Length: 314
Image (cartoon, rainbow, N blue to C red; front, side, top):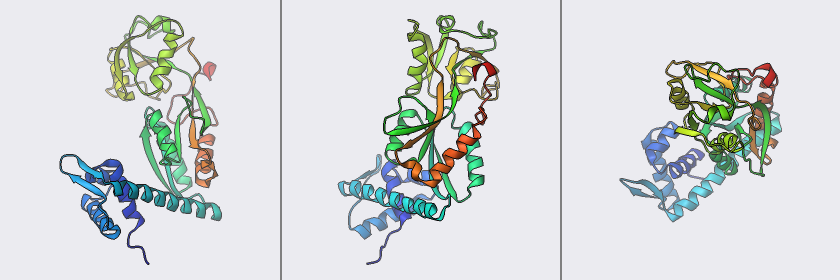
């Protein structure tokens, strides 16, 4: 009996299930809402099952049958993607979909540069980029929603593999007028009495706060933000200092004010920037090609898009 549904319709089904809204699914997939509504209606007719409960104020909720069909559709889509990858491996080609996640703090700087070179070298790859925090990257890798993720070596689960790319020591961001701005280096003891703008992301915040805990100190946290650009602007406008491992090539905050970057001495180990994969993911030629590309690009000790480290701290 011929199939009366398509992989695209199954993709719509899974995305609506994830979003809980046809409009949000349409925006994520860059298609029209009527196209998705029509696909869902056709699937319900084909399967003879109600897949969603429509609630005007709360969007769509999968029925009990819908949950099971969404899980089955996800498996079919993963299998189809696997066939595409398998065909490329058999033919010795780097092609097919590649879903790459990236930690939000450097997704706008590092990954686009690496992506551009990789896509130029492998035009048959359908590259998709996703920005997440560390916990979300782990979850997406476990659910096979991502093939590879760029992040730090922070509390990595034992069932994920990490390929290191670069070591990034912490530094202090300061406004130009800050009393510590002209110092060659500062310690957490120097910082403890000044207000801090904490980059409050999962695991990253604990890493920064551990610098003070190791010295028996508590920072004066004046503000918390999950947005790296917001943190830079708050610092540049004199609301406090912050600590980070990512240093952009520009010393200007988003609003044009200048920042000072001072090495932090006496801190714990640097963060290691690298690539995360689920076990077995590197059997894919496309994943291996992306890892090899990133490794080659960073081989000279300079991360694309980031300021080079001072020689004595490399």
